[in-house]
Image (cartoon, rainbow, N blue to C red; front, top):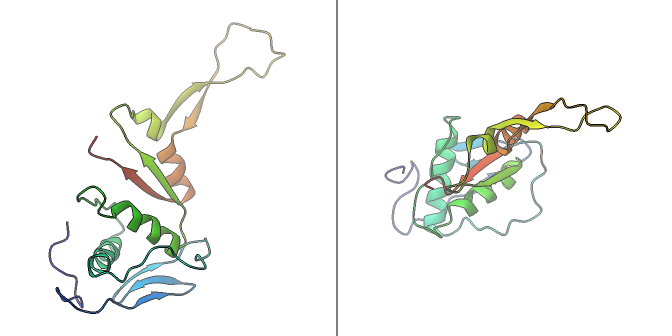
Length: 154
């Protein structure tokens, strides 16, 4: 959690900040993120006008300045995932949402050697052939997508 309102954001009934979006960047003064390769959506189903949402937007944009992974924590249904989904779209980056569970294994995320079909004539020659297959997290990182690891606590 980022404590206290970001600079320029007073707690209470302050007006919502002006959101800036153009071809090069997205953000709220003074926190901007460069835009990615995807075009901005014609309209967003997500509104940043509510005071709590505006504050959370500024907090996430401020955290993005560090170019490090961000951990969002809060009550279920508070809008953490929705905020990230809206931000990725407006910032022009694809989003890969990975739903974690107790059964999620590191090989599901990073990848593993998997059996592959033989390139021969289809006859079973007795030799097992394996090839590396990237996991969902590694594929997303390689493609430049934003990654949302949902239910990280499980």
